[in-house]
Image (cartoon, rainbow, N blue to C red):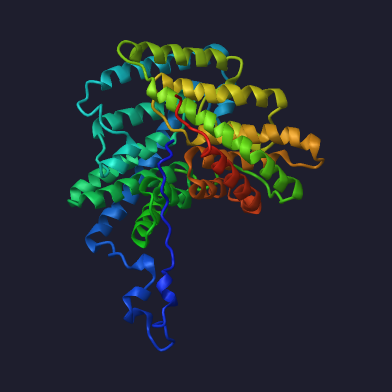
Length: 447
């Protein structure tokens, strides 16, 4: 959840207005008149096997990790069918408390032991790509990724994609070393592995590729785009060998109305402000991770409190995927919306404060969906006929875009996660634009 995004874009050279552009002059004869994005050197042929292998391995690893996640969920909450929230609600409150306390013990013990790994103080995933040419601390990253997928399966309020991104990056790093690539090529491969893991996690090849270009690389060229799209589409297709090819969220066709356009215009600033508060909380949690013996104690305390809270409100557990679906279906009442709007972000920030590893993609969308649904509830009283489902969808996409400062990939994610949100693209873009601009007006790191 960083703001250091500098998205590149191809621009037409003003020299195309030069007199040398005559109808009888082939463009290839004049270097200055060539399309800007094809002037860079092409990807070397010897790098393509590494790119293809990265996509395949990231897809397989992603599929296996998702299988592990499902196994942990089913074992902990004793269900064989239905979604995670249904399984959580199907067991007693005492079992939820027990499972979360065990998750805290596991997290504390592993985090305490991982300090003995020599590369534990290495850079994080994004920092490794931005500042270290993709050189990741392999051992500690792998251990934390496995811990993340297990604790999220047990109910930690964090995202599942963190583990898949990290393992995709590690797989790409191994491939890069096997092919003896240059540091710049290694950076490209690791970024592609991370994005491919994201694609496999959510069945979002286009969004994953745009995430690579917009966030991880911060630049767009024909060469980087080809590598990103190839690895993400390949990883997603390979993951279908283990995972279903279906949208993450089921929504009906929702038409655009004047009410919805005005809602997007009015709610955009509020979504931007909510993103600022959430990101501030995330920064605070990461800057105050436990030290010394608290590395063991704090996860146990935080997860036990989360388990106790889940005895009354089971929707607090997990990454929030099922809560998003309930918001998209307008099945969350006003009081529950308000409660989750406060407690879900607190649960996520508390898990991070305890040092637990995990992603923020779905928790951020959950905040947006709940906020959008809540604002839609009020909007429906001001404007008769307003569709609360559409408001939740717009909130999820706009808050994700603002919090990540990645509007292009966030809009793509919203489209791919639902398969049927195209009709809402105009109000979604409007709310996203306003939310992103609002976010940039405020500092996101607590003073």
